Image 1 (cartoon, rainbow, N blue to C red):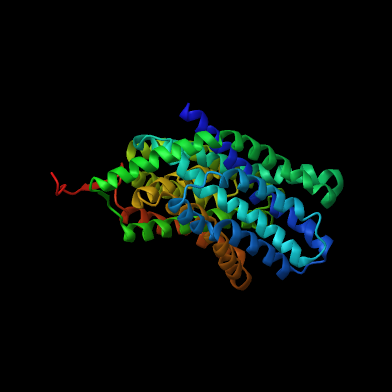
Image 2 (cartoon, rainbow, N blue to C red):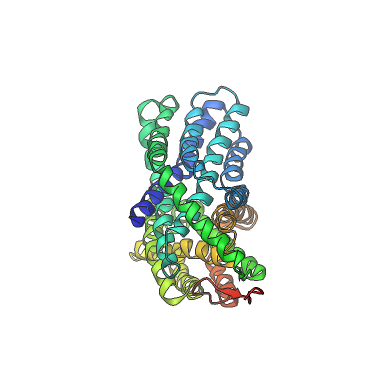
Length: 394
């Protein structure tokens, strides 16, 4: 039965992350409707990134301190409702508030959902469980643009309210599941407190956590850089006029890689999973970006599967480095990754403006080297480690 509850969490993850795929398609429509400048469009993207990603660790801290399973249905509803409001407001300020509201919904779901996914798994299968949870988010990101195009095809911005339907339905489902999720959280929290009273203290490696966050930063810069710059690079420098299908292959492969990456980390260790991911990415990314070949779709699939395969692995790794702060670890690894991806695109875009897009592409193709170095320096944690101190009363 626990697997069924985990699948529901993954479905919720899919629904809440639809917004991250919807907004890029919605933004040009909003720009035309509100007569926005490029700077104002950038502020919309920044507002969503801030509310959906940067503040996730705050929700993680609250999740660790208080049991908040009710936040999941609320977040599912807000994620779609905020975007639906963009078709109702009539000022730029209210538009930003609507986007912020949607982003808060996205941010609120992830720490609580990933904490529950962690509690629903055996420690030896944590990577597999987190992979099931994570693949929902990857699919949501990929399906979001299709949902946006479908809804906008009816009446443009006037029909955007349709994007809130999946979130509203998912919120009702999670209201029904709420009593069971509350019971799981209560049981696991009681067990954790009991272990603490008995003198079990888990190791916390702050240095390793910093290295892991740097690894996630590099991965996010590569992923976001490819997603945003492939549509510009391939038509101009590789003669491919319709590169959108390459982006789709890359993202779909990422979902496949996530499913494979979790079990791989369970069997061979998270450190080895991170290392293999970057080695394969380094080998495949240069020919993918520089060769004119019929193998480009195949190489796009290999790079996407290899690179994004560690999405769930890094979350589990962080949870094991902060075993008493599962929500905080989840918020940091999930939200921090998305936020740093946006910052990376901004920096890489500045390099492209001043020195040309080919140089930026070359930088992206070499970034896996930094990922390999960071993976090598991480500890090899195969299961939650604990230091058991003698009980004075014994």
